[in-house]
Amino acid sequence: MKIEANLVDIHTQTIYPAEIIIKEKKVHSIKKIDKKCNFYILPGFIDAHIHIESSMLIPSEFAKVAIKHGTVATVSDPHEIANVLGVDGVEFMIDNAKECGFKIYFGASPCVPATPFETNGATLTPDAIEKLLKRNDIYYLSEVMNFPGVIANDIDMHTKIALAKKYHKPIDGHSPALRGEDLQTYINAGISTDHEAFTYEEAKEKLQRGMKIQIREGSAAKNYEALHPLIDEYYEDMMFCSDDKHPNDLVKGHINQLVIRALKDGHNLYKVLQMASVNPVKHYNLDVGLLREGDNADFIVVKDLENFTLLRSCVDGEILFENDQVFLQTPKVKNINKFNTTKKSIKDFQLHNQCKEYKVINAIDGQLITKEEHQKLQNIHGNIECDIQKDILFISVVNRYESVTPALSFVHGFGLKEGAIASSVAHDSHNIVAVGCDAQSLTLAINTIIESKGGIAVVDANQHLLHLPLEIAGLMSQRDGFSIAREYEKIDKFTKDKLGSQLHAPFMTLSFMALLVIPDLKLSDKGLFETNSFHFTQECSL
Image 1 (cartoon, helix red, strand yellow):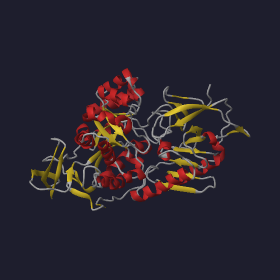
Image 2: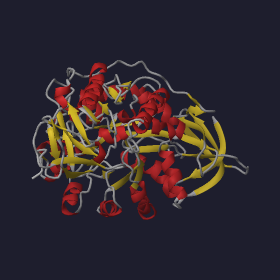
Image 3: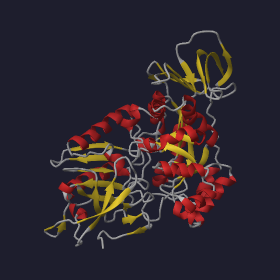
Image 4: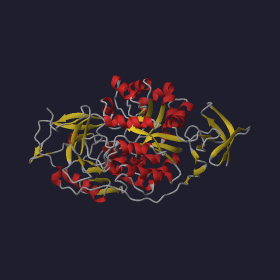
């Protein structure tokens, strides 16, 4: 293959017309030419931290969407499916990704389960982590979410970190709001990255202490605006990532969106492109080519350097996207899942506790953190009711792995005026999480998920139901990514237009209401949980 284009050379920070020869999956030669070229060739984009499961697509279908945006590789933590199916789930992701032709680099997830305060489907013991880290297709130790355990010298966490060091693999971090001496203790353990920083000051401190910061812009958590002023000074230690991206957002764009946005904000082209491609390759030791002679032939061809209109994407010298067509394999998929709970009744979602005030989870749009509120609620005929006018709604987490009584509490911030929403995408244990205005709506939405053994559902006051089944582990579909995106978009629109939610991504926000490692107040299948003290709490406030 011969390509004549303006080469965007990130390494020398120059752009010049060049003839690039591709042979046997490699960049055979690069030669400057005296010729006007109408388009540009540059390294492909890399998502430095993403959970592919959150796209609701299996890796091979995710790849078909991402490749259209100039992404040629991802660094992917499979801890969503690992929490459901353990090593078998991780191997499913690896095998499916290998067959499709797109580059996905998986890690070994050390926090499965994320905490001992919830029920999940599998545990990755130190022995299981070592089994994974020995593999050549496991590139790093995934995010160490149990940062309190690291600081407190938890034996399990430090054993897993030691194994990553033994096999010379980098260690990803996850430390929202961690500062000062505790942060230094965390870093000293060998943890090298963080994608959870949500303020300028926090990210700057982490950079100054030697961490690499991944600027996250996902469907729920959006930290670009706060962190991008750090790019000019710290670009060598920064990357771009999505973390979690729902299918309708993935169809619209990926890392290319962050590149375009950063350039419009006045950041230097070469610094931005280094964050989008070079830095992840170097940090994770990826075999992704960076358009140097001898590199693997992984690159993109674009019409311009403002909107990065994509003309071609190549991975290992194979054209995977051109003329708006995707040329990726569709591997055969075996359906794997774990879903053992039985249908629930309306009585399961009625609360009788008498409190002067109730603790309420305050969900914040665009953030994974929550705040704790205290609210008075009415008792009607012996049942504590929601206050829809104040946006105080029911939230429930239902154990998907066994039939037990659901956990029930209250949440503020979803803005529903009627009905309920439910999902089996509930980080990180992936029990069923639901928010609703009344027990009847909650019951219908949750039972829909139980009957299909996974998915998302929305129901209005008239019991009009929309449902997207997720047959793979209750997390993903093997169907075409663009059709899944259309179905999800319809459900998302119904939740906003009919039920009244004002959240940018209500189902993504919902999925983090059970994530106990993100402050302040969350709900697990076992009850209301205060993350700052790392203990369960009662729904009554003092």
